[in-house]
Length: 227
Image 1 (cartoon, rainbow, N blue to C red):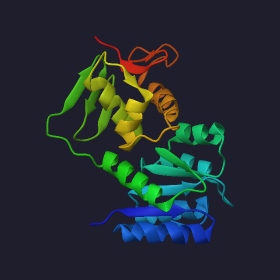
Image 2 (image 1 turned 180 degrees about the vertical axis):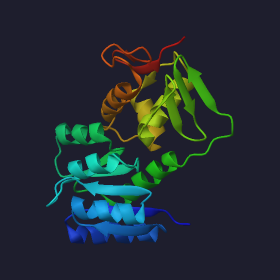
Image 3 (image 1 turned 60 degrees about the vertical axis):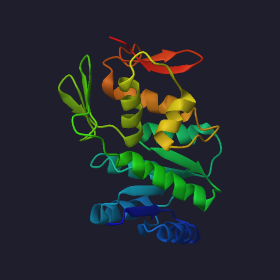
Image 4 (image 1 turned 45 degrees about the horizontal axis):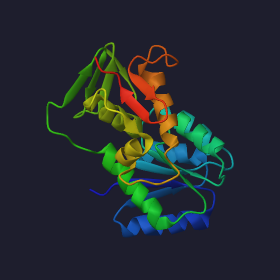
């Protein structure tokens, strides 16, 4: 069965363009033109991934994400017209898995969609459970428990934690982690890893300001603390 992609943007010509490229790749595409409409469409269609614009009437992309994330961890690729980092960081902190700056190349967007879906649907051999201190990560069910409590991670956060827990003590550069979560290195996007790490720490660390699991190696990257 083909994956369903929801495209949300108030620019109808852009939605039509993205729809055509995604349809050529075999995806089923549904659309909405503001955040309020998107909530209804998402509830009805249950998309496998959402391509979401930030600036829209009635309800912007940020508000949509806050409401949608309360009930679903659907992967989200954020579209932003601003070139500064502030808007991108806000989106990632709310829970976006990736972002693209307008104007963008439709074929690159399709590649990003493919990469995010691949991460979200990765299958692993049975029994692939990683344990460290109070954290239990199950790659089959893509679940994480901290001190016996389940925590909800985005696909990007889950894949970063998986990589770090697989090799405790190994230092991963930002580009290493970007390669893992996107499947290809997009130079200039590596600083988004810092935001994913911040979000991850907020979910698994008892004190994110003094992390006991995910350590920063200054000037290099990150590692999972060796027991």
